[in-house]
Length: 296
Image 1 (tube, one colour):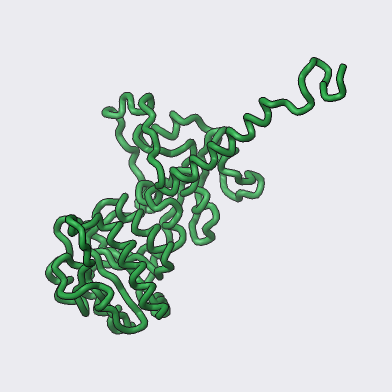
Image 2 (cartoon, rainbow, N blue to C red):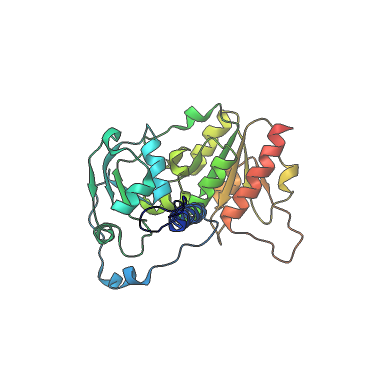
């Protein structure tokens, strides 16, 4: 027997083990891109069967179910998030990379179907769900030292709000402020769309947006509402050292009261044939432009 063979005739370095290692790395890289929204997540057809008959279980007002590997990891790492119980499949547990002995909360190994019963057949939960309490309520006064804020005027789609939160974290905004009505509450859908950003930036819901803008003015913020018919380009409208960008819902845009309350209205100049953008894309561009002003 040659020196590079083990008993049984297999090479000392088993090619299948190397293939498995690289397959694991490729899967982890692909999962990370999906969690960041860079590539779409395939819809597993089998889990959709019978979805018409699914009814969501009743949740208590202080009960939130978070799901998805990246979302749950971020929640587990957030000391301000009160965690109640972790539900995970055996495979997801290995990918979640948590030490159950030091986790500090109850956990249960479950099947994907058991999570489906709670979240529904459409939720892409990746085999993990975390029962939590909502994050603590934040006050506007606590934002007085933040140079950049983002304000949403009745943006209703949780996927858009989640994407906006990711951009807000990327550009180091101090908070995302929105209305209590006609805006998504803290939920698994919002958290999954935010892909961890919900744990990294205050999400403040206010009763009256005009009053909140007035309070921001008292705290020294210049509020700028984005409007496709705005009188001046956004980059020429910035002033001061503290900015609050205000974006309206798709279709309706800013409400009249909001338009009357902000310090200025501005537009994103777009030379191409399309003159309007998805609100999450517009938010990212506006945040980038605001950061350039604040750094100047």
